Length: 289
Image (cartoon, rainbow, N blue to C red; front, side):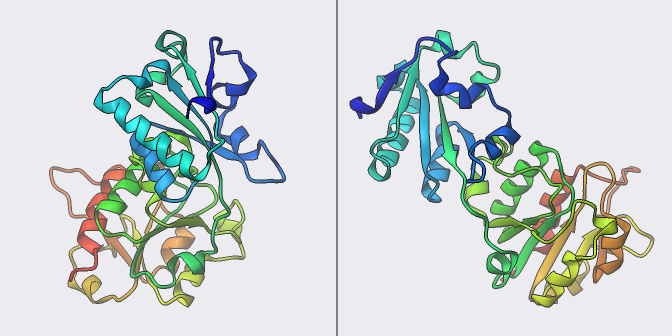
């Protein structure tokens, strides 16, 4: 491991600029026409990425990684794991005084990694054999994306499919909020869809129907069914469609779904944040064995 360690004394060092200089979108396209990279932070998130087979391009850690604290042991474990598959991966180190100058460094727990992106699978390859999936339409907030993935992992959702307007699950904040579950739950994008759902000839609901799913829209309509309706337990394959934080689902999407459902609420509250609503929906609509 010692031969991989590269001491950094200045944040302007070009070798670590992917960690600080580029925004998320720039990292996606940094190697075009080849796949880009993304940033992982914290030992737990990085470990889940490694466990899922993602390849690190580099690590950035504090000099103090040789101490014996619990957090440092976790860092050393992930470095050991990474070096088994990528023995030449550079490990950049810097003092806490240097790294603490970076905005947001406090939440990284002492370790970051640049990870290489992978090609996404086709929708049919990801969900064809699944029984409970979630579809996210135009959900752009990375915190909500991360929270939804975490709830999906915990509550029995097998896959996530996103429309093109959705925030990238591999964005740094999304992955962190998800606690790394974005690397555990299979996911992909609808690839044939244009940017504007209302004007699109391609219809992802039709694709879900072709794959055998009954599709339920989470929406507040006059004809919405209660989410506790026992009819949903009888569905062998169920796709739960959830919309953006502000506008919800498009009218076109709602009209194409097999069911429209709502969560019963009290005290005059008529809606929940999409992340909170997802947890309720996943639990209630899970495949009950």
